Amino acid sequence: MHHAVFAGGQRGVELAADSDMTLGDVIIHDMCSNDDARGLGILDRASTALQRVTVHDVAGRDGVDILVPGNRAARFASSAYGVQLSGEATLDAREVTIHDIRGGSAGGFLPDFDRRAGGAGLAPGGHAVGLGCARCTVRAVDLSVQRITAGDGGVGQPGADAEGFFRDGSDGARGSRGGAAYGVDVQDGQLELDRVDIRHIRGGTGGDGGFGGDGLDALSGDDGHLGGDGGTGGTGGEMVALRVHLTEEPRVHNAVIHDVVGGRSGTGGRGGSGGRGGVDRGPVPAGIGGVGGAGGDTPEPGFMAAVGGASRAIDLQHVTVYGAVVPEPAPGGPGGSGGPGGTNADGSVAADGPDGAVGGTTDFEVRLVILVNDALARGLLLVGGPAPVTVYGIFDNDAFEPNVIEESLVWALDDDLAPYPTVEARDPLLRDPEIGDLRLSEGSPAIDGAPSSDVEIDVDGNPRTPPADIGAYEFVAP
Image 1 (tube, one colour):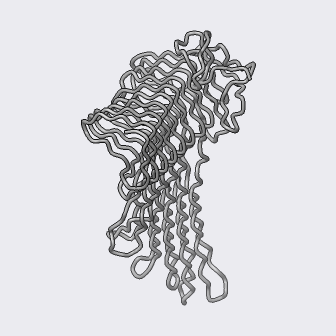
Image 2 (spheres, rainbow, N blue to C red):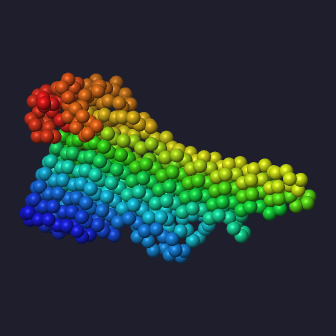
Image 3 (tube, helix red, strand yellow):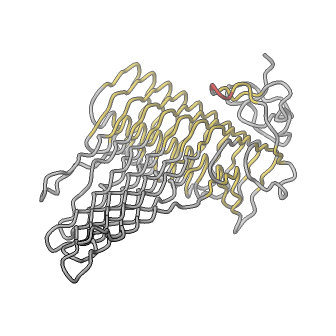
């Protein structure tokens, strides 16, 4: 199939199982579905060659709020895939562009009809994947994946205010998790990538925790009743620009990963207010105000990495990572206000109830490149930046077989480089990273820094003249 445009629809172009197909000069765009949306689907055991194919603007639908008591029917947020392969399919791709893939955001909350506490937020935000497959073979050259955005999680249901026999406010519910975002996601298959550009990947934000319900005002002489605790915020969505999981001996050469952001966790819900203390009625003095509910806790943001997954013997050479943004932790929810004290007959006022505690936050760390068992990592150029937590460039997980990590640069990161004599912490002097130009400037310490490299060209297609430069780009004098 050549010279075709497919616009609009729900499932996009679907290549049948066991088929053998070539697509060239094809554009697929503007797909949206209540179920998972997909630009191009390659089904079981299909063998497909793509050349000069563009897939863009694929969107999952947002979830729908549930506001009617007794109605459990809901449309959950759906996920979106630019190109998706299923079992044992094979893809050979050249000059393929995938961009603007968006998972749907979760709706509101699913009411809990069995208890007064708020129901949990809906299912997570929709996932967003540029190129994804499981149990498949992917070979790609000149692959561009950009603007992959997962949907946000849903807010937790507020707790009920006290009424009738229920005198304390009920607790708010937890927000739901943000959707996961992957630029390229290959699991349990084979992978060969060369000249890959992955940019602008966003994990979904977790939903905020529900507010706690307010406590009931007391009757004569009693203390005010307790406010409900705020719900915990939802965990941020996972973000991995290039996930290679349980894939045997994958190879990735000449990759640029730029402007990738983990999912921020949701804010803890506000605690409910304590009830007013009861007034003085004869021999019983006025009651003190009720205790405000505690604010909801905030969990850690979603897991994030530029390159991640448990794959043995990955061959990872000449990768540039810049602009991996660690989100600021969301604050814990504010505590509820303590209730005012009741008034005595002489006009004096009993003590106010104490305010609820502020919700807590969670410490975490980030690792940009995760290597597991017998990996070769050479010519990596990893640049960090301001971050609210510790960020390591390389996680060397060699529990069973040692990894080779050499001839690389890290900058503005927290790595201990003592075990790696040819890995240095030096400013790579990139040309203009603020506008996304990650090429090397004259005088960069990355020039000639990877003499052991056997990669012959760079991400732009320029020849690598030995000794090769560190990073995806070979230095070319202006």
